[in-house]
Length: 86
Image (cartoon, rainbow, N blue to C red; front, side, top):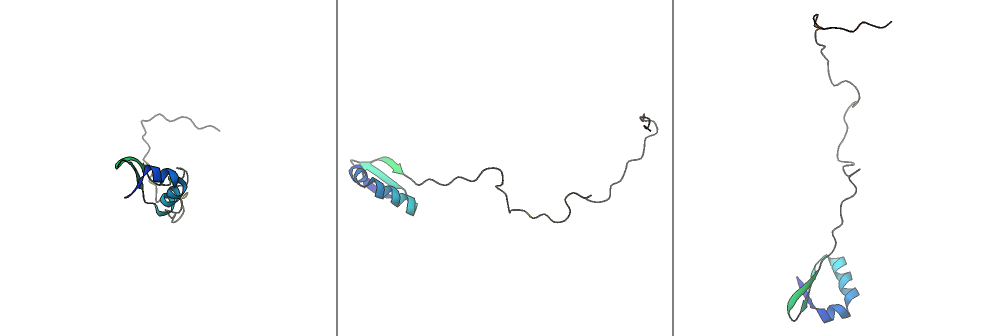
C-alpha cells in the first residue's frame, strides 16, 4: 500500500483522490511516520432489489398452464356437501 505524508496529502489532495479513484489502490496518510488515515475507493453497491436477477433465468414452456395430470380425490360420501345453486 502506498504511503504519503499528511503535509503532502494536504498539498496534493485532488491529485491523490483522483489517483485512488482511477487505480483503485488505497493510500495510507501518515503523520510522523504513523498512519492516521486510509484513503480507499468506494465500491459501487448493487442495484435495487427489484430487477437484480434480470436476465439470470430463462422460462421454458408455458408457466400458466397445468404442470401435468391432476388426479381428483374420490368423494367422501360421509362428508357434508353444500346443495348446488340453480
